[in-house]
Length: 639
Image (tube, rainbow, N blue to C red):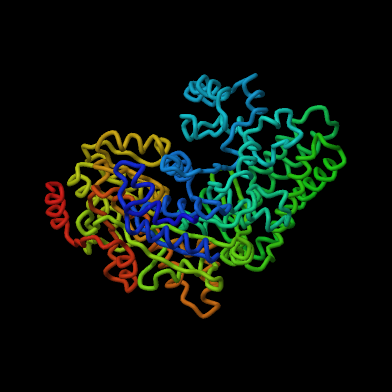
């Protein structure tokens, strides 16, 4: 007999019977029924579900009940781990038979062969890094998954890169410890499971591989009937990254370094050194041709591409020579040959610069330079490669709708307009009017106006002092973050934390421990949970528009305008409105959280598009004067 989601998530359902304190949530049940229907009728679903809905159970229950093979993809590994370690065990306690697998990219798994080599001669960047080695060794001999998430290693522990592997360096079936390989075990388990939990990066890497190679045998994921994308607001960026092509200076250096490390193959070192020299020269040439300063992302003109094609001649020659030589050298360097061939082909694709629907650009971060060919409209690739093959695709997030046109922007960017689909919006169970005040001051200068930084610093200082810390101060640009921090920090009596001074996880731990203020950039706008009294104030310095000269943004605006549209209104505004919605969402994570979100950008009042931003946010109490904020917070603190 077919079990329906009502029998699991409803008032007298399995979860209510099995779990003490389980509360039926109408929005959760509505989302679950919509997912159930989409799976049964084999159509696609785009669903916005507010914070606190219980989205994960709302799609996991119908996915498991369907009997179909379903891939669940998340933007972050944090949510991926939560699903596998918390939500699925919850369903098992309620009587579900859960046949599921957790699958991550190779870099998340310990490589047995590399561990043996490193253990024989361990080298660390600092004494602090060395201090973790004993615990890592003890874990390595007892783990059954090899998943780094089981350890307490800090994010910045650099030695991990020498203990894990990549598709470039993996020996595959030729590895002497292949049968015990954690990556192989994880993939085998995934192939035997009805539910596979991945992240967007791995999903799109797999989809891009299928699209380029057309070979099922090369795919990472098993065949699936349906896909559920949680945190779907991040889909376009993930798809852009993995449907594009990139060649970095680090990749070329890694190829030459690995070639030099292979002993006993006559002639190999000469090819490796030639490759390193040619790669170093192209990095210098690219920085000069594209005028790349640190942090730059520059669109390459036809003239610049032509110049780089000429200058890249020695690198093309070195890659070609290494490819041909490696293919003749036999099994010992098979992987090297494949990597050199792929790098050669991809570099040629980028510098040719003629592929329609792509933008070609150069980036620099520190000493690393990337050359990229990025798809302008990855939704088209989804329409061609995903929707016709997956019977059901569910996309859900708390931030998909933009006022007043609802899902129009999301459907356009996801390439779903012509595919059969439904949309659903279910609200949050939180009482935003009671729990949150939205402070929108009118008196501050507009961006680029003289005196802006000093005015922002005065406002931030006053608000942080009112709340005695417990504040995130979020910026759209690192330079402004550092400038305001420098003005405000000396005058605060609470601990002040600054992004970049220590790893992200350490900043969040320190913030949770005692009332503090954290100055951070857009990397803290999403995927950060600080429930309770530790966070009562979120300050956002200005509306998070993408720079119009950023290569992908500029290319997307051009496409819209060539088609007769208005790029700013149809792309810039809705994208920024969803980003603001994400920043707003940092404040309230539970029904008892309360506080103020302050957006210090007067354009919300002075520009016609300001209403789009405000109306897209949850219905908080709106305040316009600092005195109103003080009165509201005093009253809220009593209740």
